[in-house]
Amino acid sequence: MKKLHLYKLTKAVGGIALCFLSLSCSDFLKESDPSNLSPDNFYTIPDHAEAAIAATYADLRFYGDGAGIFSSNWQLLEAVTGTSTTETAQNSDLNNLYSLSYDGNTQHVINWWNGLYKVIANANLVLDKVPSIDPMDETQKTKILSEARFLRALAYFNIVRLWGDAPLITLPQTASSEDFFPERTSQEQIYNLIVEDLQFAESGLSAWTDASGRVNKAAVKALLSKVYLTMAGYPLQKGASHYTLAANKAKEVIDYANANPSEIGLFDTYKQVHDETLKNTKEHLFQIQYNSVVAGNPMGNYYPNFKPVTYSGPGGTGSTVPTRSFYDSFESGDLRTKDQDGWFYTSYYTNGNGEPFDLGAPYVFKHFNQIANGYEGVAGTRNNNLNVPVLRYAEVLLIYAEAQNEVGGPDANTLAALKQIRDRAELSTPGLGSFSKDSFREAVWKERWYEFCYESKTWFDMVRLRKVFNEKTKGFDDFVGHVNLNTNVTLSEKHLLFPLGIQEMLNNPNLSPQNPGYN
Image (tube, helix red, strand yellow):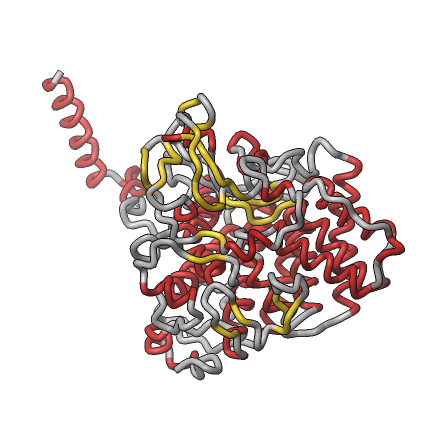
């Protein structure tokens, strides 16, 4: 066998030598070195476009990457809400988030900036390079470009809500780019690009759902409705025009769901929300994709500290756990608080599938994969393939209810949207005559706090509404002056935005000035 290989190698080398003596081999000599790929020589065939958009999707997983000991990037948006606390307290940056004393050196802040702009950088490469690939099926090309526009819009939507004015980069960057040190762009201009990107994606995608997890028409419409709702509130305060846009766009998804209930709708149970066999289906309009072969689900910091709730025995970090005051604020009988039925569990099975034991407190099991970790009498697979939800149909219902109420007050349709959420929680909903415009508004807000807790949505609601749910009064306080009960720290004006990373500002002086209130 070795002789055969040597013979083949000798023939190959001989063939290459002949090329140097023959003009007919000139094409061989012009071949690009495949080990030196660059954007200029990579985007040549449709498979390259598919690989590039896949890389952009993969970049979304920065959300679950580590931010020091016992902490993940996603905790940035949970620790500051006042609905969670920690049992571990061994990560100083995470402790600073809980105490609202974070600054531009906080690792979570730095990681979010870098992660989001990496998504944008790869999306920009796709948008710049894919149009020139020829030959390529135009339908395939439009689909990929639409997905890239959605992913860029999603990244900028997070950026503008976290930092306000920020660099608006729409082309690939190199060290020779004129705007290699970009200045910050106004929030209004960033939102204009977000809407433009989503409108492009909406027109370019034909499938309403996609079980593979790729961007689909329902996800685009849902995100666009959410963007309009945010623009209607703070800081842009577009008001009635954008509440109307939000309601109308959400209604398009609702109408499709009503006509196609097997494709889009609420799951029957809360366990189905974190069932890995149902990811990318029905209620899950868009998720961050996880597979243990590449990257397993990153939400383990919710697991109770040193409790044997998984196949691996005592473990977990408990670095994000619900505050008792928030848990106790749910209505009596709310299924979302029922042990092993809702978002919180107060007991589980030893090592995932053994004898039941009491956890001693409520813990967040909203992202707990029973198939991977085990459940009553069934051992876990140890492969946590559960996705992270970004857009659920439940949010579309509540966007519609809130936005339509702002336009014309409560009506039968807004009540029906709210009632679907409460019905699943096994809660009764007062009749239409029981609501004023103001009371219905707060009813929807409160439902958002309960339905979307621990999904990185609550903080953004606090900022766009300038209101925070008060767990004692069951009403809403002004953002500025609200006291987070778990730390007894008061929210101030500066907390409406996060600080820019210090090192990023040192690298790019054009980012100055720092956001107000941060040194």
